[in-house]
Image 1 (cartoon, rainbow over the protein chains, first blue to last red):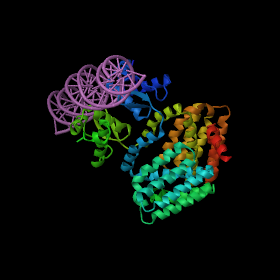
Image 2 (image 1 turned 180 degrees about the vertical axis):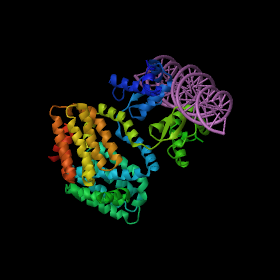
Image 3 (image 1 turned 90 degrees about the vertical axis):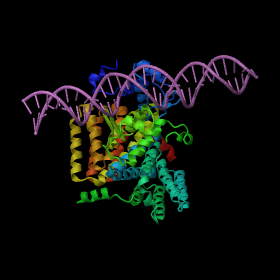
Amino acid sequence: MVEQRKQVVRRRKLSDEVTDLLLQRIKNDKMKPGDLLPSERQLMEDYGVGRPAIREALQNLDSMGIVSISHGERSRVAEPDFESILERLGHTTRHMLVNSPRTLDELKHARLVFEMGLVREAARRARDGDVQRLRRRLEEQTALVEQPSEFMRADMAFHREIAEIAGNPILVTVSQAIFDWLIVFHTELVRAPGAESLTLQEHADILAAIEARDPDAAERALYAHLTRANGLYQFYEAQRKKTAE
Amino acid sequence: MVEQRKQVVRRRKLSDEVTDLLLQRIKNDKMKPGDLLPSERQLMEDYGVGRPAIREALQNLDSMGIVSISHGERSRVAEPDFESILERLGHTTRHMLVNSPRTLDELKHARLVFEMGLVREAARRARDGDVQRLRRRLEEQTALVEQPSEFMRADMAFHREIAEIAGNPILVTVSQAIFDWLIVFHTELVRAPGAESLTLQEHADILAAIEARDPDAAERALYAHLTRANGLYQFYEAQRKKTAE
DNA sequence: CACGCTTAACTCGTCATACCAGTTGAGGGT
DNA sequence: ACCCTCAACTGGTATGACGAGTTAAGCGTG
């Protein structure tokens, strides 16, 4: 009951068929995270295919974060986990950034748009406690001005705090992930002499705008910060100029 | 030269080792998209491991979008492709939305923040031609008011056009992907009687704001549109009220 | 000589079997 | 009653064989 598909779907890989069968099985059986799947041997028998097909399918699902495989015990339906997914995307993104130069500019610009929306939301939602935590992050960073790598870490923590004020774990994770992807490419910029004090000043501006619950000011401050720190928006700035003609 | 790691890293899977070796190889040899990797047999010999390990590693890389495998020919370094990656994330996201109810609200809110930033950027960058294309999308949608599924498609096209005005393929792809992920869950809402004319009116408001190059108005219009269309932001609205206390 | 078809030599895809390596739990010894 | 051992699961890897798709060389024909 697996083979006839070969007529309909053009030479679909057997392991992909099995992948779908397993997805269907999980759905139909209403399996919850943590539930055990049958063993590979059992599944071979159920679907009448060899072990490689089963293993490939399970590994597919594992890489999608839908099941988790571990040596010695049966596979389980995985806990949903946004973070590990984006982590996996890291390699992918790095590959894209290396092999498609324009993507770097695009990603920087996407981050800019994304973080501007984020900081506006943060300015709208910030409670007093949030502002205090953000201020503490800024103070921590100030204290680390002499240690570039720690300074960078504190920089990340500051931006992360903003995302957390927006109050949504997805936004936190995405913001963090983009930061991670870009960090490789602009480390040297942040380390430029004098850049640390600039960064701190800009962060202070952002903090002030959030404290004042002023989305527009926060957006402006973040824009100034990112366009300087990321350095080069040549591509998009050039495009904008051309646009303005 | 593979085995000694077993002491350092705690029983790491062999196929993961091979995955890293291949990543390293691609990087060191500066292989470009389209370049052919050695055959599986050759790689077995190179690294002194069995074929399953090689195959698993290649499939890992394939699922990351770094190499592409096809029957009959050697594997190649893949063309970077954001879209296919996000498509792959579809299953994952669906799994998360089904098994983690809060995620649905979070994703809706994340979309709201994201699209608000997006529409502001669109309002800032829009050229006359962009406005015309967007107007055409709205007219197309107006004509399809009687065919729910086509109407939905036109709705998507309208939002996509906004992302394209922002001028960044990443933003387009992400916006599109989120729309796809959510569509399953709120189809019925959009189909609610009378909703079509509301949707069209709101889209018209957004269009007008973009045409006027007014980011604030565009953001307000989009906020009104999404909060109504997505219906329920109970979670975040409740949280906001609690916050305001 | 030029063109087209056959076919051989690759490639990945799948199966079968065996064995290694973790995990678990039942049973026997204390 | 407790702990420890070990057998019986589980997934992980190796090997060899064969099927299926792709490619290109070489033969045959015009």
